[in-house]
Image 1 (spheres, one colour):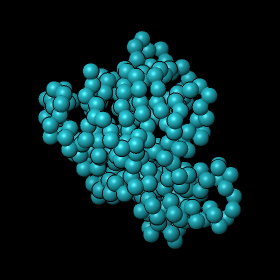
Image 2 (cartoon, rainbow, N blue to C red; image 1 turned 30 degrees about the vertical axis):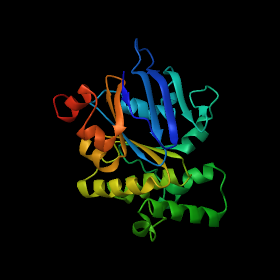
Image 3 (spheres, rainbow, N blue to C red; image 1 turned 180 degrees about the vertical axis):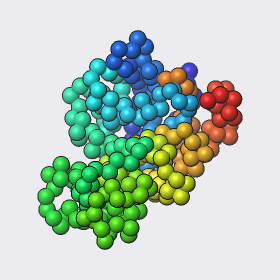
Length: 261
């Protein structure tokens, strides 16, 4: 039985008895995961490679549906509904629950058009509104001052750290409720990593954040809550400081102290 903290604040997402099975697999990769995700907080998922962290993260906006044959069971509750319902509008869902990937993926277009892309998909065509929303997103992603004079330049001319902040601007431009970060700094240098970590902490005022990281120090620095996963199961979820200092589960303690991983 997993050790799961009782979140005292409102939940952005609530996972109940969730299971996920890849196409052709004989057993689920995620087994009976139950966890609350606190609103306007940062929840980190840690654990050894292959434990199911990224599989769980990508379930939160049904990213696995891009590959037919995978199956879900259980419930992921968001805005009062189970997003695993086959009738769920996945385009709308991914607007509300955005994702930032491990490797920055700027679209092959201008800096401005990268951020405006999702807004145009939402039907926003007014030039003044587009310009205002793009500027605000770039400001919120802490990159406006660096790019304001070259908005028409190719986004692929930006550095890795700048491209990652551009991807964050693109995600927040459409005003999501939740942002999913999958190892967002693993391809970045230490200075860029510090910048992204500061940005993530600032963003929780506006959105709820879930971050997958192999870096336990990063989880300790940025997150309010941490979940430890092992072999497709959530072993423990608690306030970050408590989980790292006084974990309740033996497996958690062994992982944090480096006895396996």
